[in-house]
Image (cartoon, rainbow, N blue to C red):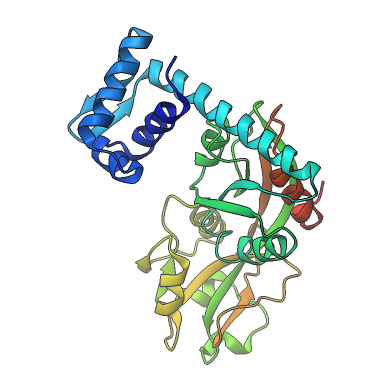
Length: 296
C-alpha cells in the first residue's frame, strides 16, 4: 500500500486541482508527483482523477479514496491530541469552518482566548458559503463549523444555536445615526453596500425586502466585510451585518450599528459537527470553550 506521504500528496492535488501547485507546496517536482499519482492509480486499478482543461478533479473513485484518507488523518490527529493530553500539554490542529459573517467578529476573540490557555494548539480556519460547511464536515476537512442556517441533514449533529439580528452599519456622522432602530425604508434613499448573493445575509435581506415591499438597490456588492467597512466609512453609504441581540456592537472606530425594525430581520447561527465523529481532545475542548455562547 502507498505510504502516508503519498496520500498527503494525493489530498494536496485534490485541494489545489493542480499537480504543479501541489508539488510546489510539497517541495517536489511536478513530474515526481505525477509519477506517484499514476502509481497509486495503478495500485487501485482505476483512475482517481478526471483530467480537465482547468486541472485535476477527483472522480467517484478518487472521492472514496480521499474520504478514507482524510478520515485516517483525522483519527491520527485525534490520537496525537489524546497522547499530548496525557501529559497535560494540549496539542493538535483544530479545523474550523465559518460563514463570512462569523469569521471576522466571532472566531478571533475565541481563538485568542483558547490559545492563551493552550498555546500548543494551532488553527486552520476556512470561510464557507451556504451549504459548503456540511460537505467539509463529511469530507473531514473541518472538525466543527459555525454557520448560518445550514441545511438539515441526518449526517450533521447540532450542538447549539445563537440568535443573530440584522443590523444596519454606517458612519457615526450618518443622518440615521440619531435613530435607535431603523427600518428598511429608512435605508432605501441611501447608497447600499450589500452582501453577495451566495451569503445567508443576502437571503435574509431579500426576505425582509419582499415582506416590506422595499427594493434594495446595491451600489456595491461583496462578501468581504472588511472591504465593505472601508466603503461605508466617511460616507452616506449603508451596509448590513448580523450581530447577537445582546452584543455590545463593537465595530471599527467611527462606525455605528442599529438593528432593523422587522420581525424577519433575524436568523440563527448554528454550531455543528459530523454526527458520530469523535473529535480530537483539542477540538472537543474548543467546542466546550465556545458552547456557553450557544443555546443547547
